[in-house]
Figure 1 (cartoon, rainbow, N blue to C red):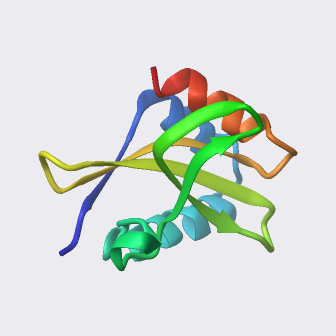
Figure 2: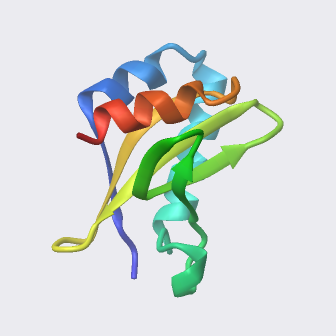
Length: 105
């Protein structure tokens, strides 16, 4: 089942920080994952986060674009068929997870 990717206002601002080519790659990755964003434990492609670096990220999953050094953190809104993008940021240590935990409240 295809999920509709929706970005939070903050995630849209994150995306704007990248150049046009990078934004296209990020949007393509999001759209590919939207075909089956469920966690791998449920037969999907998502990498569930759980607890990372002492942060409770339960219910969030990530997309990693290794060559670009980018992580995209999202959550599935199960009452709809929505994949909400929470944060898009560089893969700099645990910073992306700190931002995700703050925005997921």
